[in-house]
Amino acid sequence: MASWQEDLRARFLEPVAVIGIGNASSGDDAAGPEVARLLAGRTRAAVFDCGAVPENFIGPIARSKPKCILLVDAAPSGSKPGTVSVHSLAGMRESTFHTHAASPSLFLAVLVTRTRAECFMIGIQPARTGMGETMSDEVAAACREVADEIARLLPAAP
Image 1 (cartoon, rainbow, N blue to C red):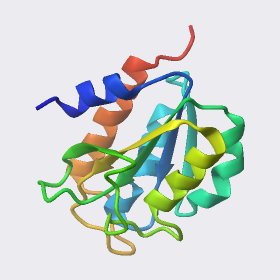
Image 2 (image 1 turned 45 degrees about the horizontal axis):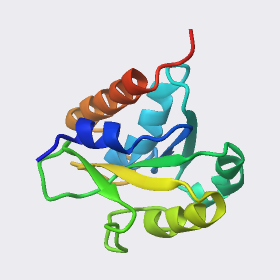
Image 3 (image 1 turned 90 degrees about the horizontal axis):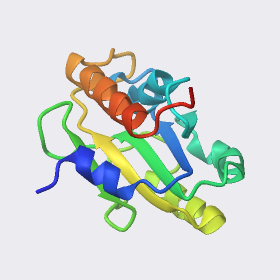
Image 4 (image 1 turned 60 degrees about the horizontal axis):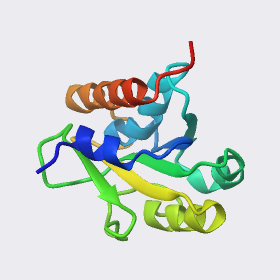
Protein backbone atom coordinates (compact mmCIF):
# COMPACT_ATOMS: atom_id res chain seq x y z
CA MET A 1 0.00 0.00 0.00
CA ALA A 2 1.30 3.46 -0.93
CA SER A 3 1.92 6.01 1.78
CA TRP A 4 -0.26 9.11 1.94
CA GLN A 5 2.77 11.11 0.75
CA GLU A 6 3.12 8.95 -2.38
CA ASP A 7 -0.61 9.17 -2.98
CA LEU A 8 -0.47 12.96 -2.66
CA ARG A 9 2.49 13.24 -5.04
CA ALA A 10 0.73 11.07 -7.62
CA ARG A 11 -2.44 13.19 -7.56
CA PHE A 12 -0.98 16.69 -7.87
CA LEU A 13 -1.58 18.39 -11.21
CA GLU A 14 -0.63 22.07 -11.23
CA PRO A 15 -1.96 24.60 -10.61
CA VAL A 16 -3.17 23.35 -7.22
CA ALA A 17 -5.65 24.87 -4.77
CA VAL A 18 -5.32 23.74 -1.15
CA ILE A 19 -8.50 24.25 0.84
CA GLY A 20 -8.52 23.99 4.63
CA ILE A 21 -11.93 23.54 6.21
CA GLY A 22 -12.88 23.17 9.84
CA ASN A 23 -14.08 24.91 12.95
CA ALA A 24 -11.22 26.60 14.80
CA SER A 25 -13.24 26.49 18.05
CA SER A 26 -13.69 22.72 18.00
CA GLY A 27 -10.35 21.14 18.83
CA ASP A 28 -9.05 18.87 16.11
CA ASP A 29 -11.72 20.05 13.67
CA ALA A 30 -9.34 23.00 13.13
CA ALA A 31 -6.94 20.71 11.21
CA GLY A 32 -7.79 22.16 7.78
CA PRO A 33 -7.39 25.81 8.77
CA GLU A 34 -4.20 24.93 10.64
CA VAL A 35 -2.66 23.36 7.53
CA ALA A 36 -3.66 26.45 5.52
CA ARG A 37 -2.06 28.69 8.16
CA LEU A 38 1.14 26.62 8.17
CA LEU A 39 1.38 26.86 4.37
CA ALA A 40 1.23 30.66 4.23
CA GLY A 41 4.13 31.88 2.08
CA ARG A 42 5.62 28.38 1.74
CA THR A 43 3.96 27.09 -1.43
CA ARG A 44 3.05 28.13 -4.94
CA ALA A 45 -0.37 26.49 -4.51
CA ALA A 46 -3.34 28.80 -3.99
CA VAL A 47 -4.23 28.31 -0.31
CA PHE A 48 -7.66 29.01 1.16
CA ASP A 49 -8.61 28.89 4.84
CA CYS A 50 -12.35 28.36 4.43
CA GLY A 51 -13.13 27.78 8.11
CA ALA A 52 -16.51 26.18 8.71
CA VAL A 53 -18.18 27.76 5.66
CA PRO A 54 -16.27 26.55 2.58
CA GLU A 55 -19.19 27.29 0.26
CA ASN A 56 -18.42 31.01 0.73
CA PHE A 57 -15.10 30.45 -1.08
CA ILE A 58 -16.35 28.73 -4.24
CA GLY A 59 -15.91 31.88 -6.37
CA PRO A 60 -12.37 32.73 -5.25
CA ILE A 61 -11.28 29.09 -5.55
CA ALA A 62 -12.74 28.83 -9.07
CA ARG A 63 -11.01 32.10 -10.07
CA SER A 64 -7.65 30.57 -9.09
CA LYS A 65 -8.21 28.18 -12.04
CA PRO A 66 -6.92 25.03 -10.35
CA LYS A 67 -6.38 21.78 -12.20
CA CYS A 68 -6.20 20.02 -8.84
CA ILE A 69 -8.11 20.78 -5.63
CA LEU A 70 -6.93 19.36 -2.32
CA LEU A 71 -9.34 19.64 0.60
CA VAL A 72 -7.81 19.23 4.08
CA ASP A 73 -10.17 18.41 6.94
CA ALA A 74 -10.52 16.38 10.11
CA ALA A 75 -12.08 13.05 9.11
CA PRO A 76 -12.44 9.75 10.94
CA SER A 77 -10.65 6.80 9.43
CA GLY A 78 -10.97 4.46 12.38
CA SER A 79 -7.26 4.93 13.02
CA LYS A 80 -5.32 6.46 15.87
CA PRO A 81 -5.55 10.25 16.28
CA GLY A 82 -3.34 12.15 13.85
CA THR A 83 -3.42 9.46 11.17
CA VAL A 84 -3.41 11.02 7.69
CA SER A 85 -5.41 9.45 4.86
CA VAL A 86 -6.17 10.41 1.26
CA HIS A 87 -9.69 10.10 -0.16
CA SER A 88 -10.94 10.45 -3.71
CA LEU A 89 -14.05 12.50 -4.38
CA ALA A 90 -15.85 9.31 -5.40
CA GLY A 91 -14.92 7.72 -2.08
CA MET A 92 -16.29 10.51 0.07
CA ARG A 93 -19.76 9.97 1.53
CA GLU A 94 -22.19 12.02 3.56
CA SER A 95 -21.10 9.97 6.57
CA THR A 96 -17.69 11.65 6.43
CA PHE A 97 -17.13 13.55 9.66
CA HIS A 98 -17.76 17.24 9.34
CA THR A 99 -19.11 20.14 11.36
CA HIS A 100 -19.53 22.46 8.43
CA ALA A 101 -22.66 23.98 6.93
CA ALA A 102 -22.18 21.96 3.73
CA SER A 103 -20.61 18.53 3.54
CA PRO A 104 -17.12 18.24 2.02
CA SER A 105 -18.42 15.92 -0.71
CA LEU A 106 -21.15 18.38 -1.78
CA PHE A 107 -18.72 21.29 -1.65
CA LEU A 108 -16.20 19.44 -3.84
CA ALA A 109 -18.93 18.36 -6.26
CA VAL A 110 -19.83 22.03 -6.84
CA LEU A 111 -16.15 22.89 -7.32
CA VAL A 112 -15.71 20.07 -9.86
CA THR A 113 -18.65 21.45 -11.83
CA ARG A 114 -17.21 24.99 -11.73
CA THR A 115 -13.54 24.17 -12.34
CA ARG A 116 -13.37 20.69 -13.92
CA ALA A 117 -10.42 20.15 -11.57
CA GLU A 118 -9.36 16.84 -10.12
CA CYS A 119 -10.43 16.85 -6.46
CA PHE A 120 -9.40 14.83 -3.47
CA MET A 121 -9.18 15.15 0.28
CA ILE A 122 -6.60 14.66 2.99
CA GLY A 123 -8.33 13.56 6.17
CA ILE A 124 -6.69 13.73 9.57
CA GLN A 125 -8.11 11.45 12.26
CA PRO A 126 -9.32 13.68 15.12
CA ALA A 127 -8.97 12.88 18.81
CA ARG A 128 -11.33 15.56 20.17
CA THR A 129 -13.78 17.85 18.45
CA GLY A 130 -15.83 19.36 21.26
CA MET A 131 -16.67 23.05 21.19
CA GLY A 132 -14.00 24.99 23.07
CA GLU A 133 -11.48 22.13 22.95
CA THR A 134 -7.87 22.71 21.96
CA MET A 135 -6.14 20.79 19.20
CA SER A 136 -4.55 17.51 20.30
CA ASP A 137 -0.78 17.07 20.04
CA GLU A 138 -1.26 14.20 17.56
CA VAL A 139 -3.35 16.26 15.16
CA ALA A 140 -1.08 19.31 15.51
CA ALA A 141 1.88 17.11 14.52
CA ALA A 142 -0.06 15.68 11.57
CA CYS A 143 -0.93 19.22 10.41
CA ARG A 144 2.76 20.15 10.44
CA GLU A 145 3.62 16.98 8.52
CA VAL A 146 0.94 17.60 5.87
CA ALA A 147 1.93 21.26 5.45
CA ASP A 148 5.62 20.33 5.22
CA GLU A 149 4.90 17.72 2.54
CA ILE A 150 2.79 20.11 0.45
CA ALA A 151 5.49 22.81 0.76
CA ARG A 152 8.13 20.26 -0.26
CA LEU A 153 6.14 19.14 -3.31
CA LEU A 154 5.02 22.65 -4.35
CA PRO A 155 7.57 25.09 -2.92
CA ALA A 156 7.06 28.83 -3.22
CA ALA A 157 8.98 30.56 -5.97
CA PRO A 158 12.33 31.91 -4.71
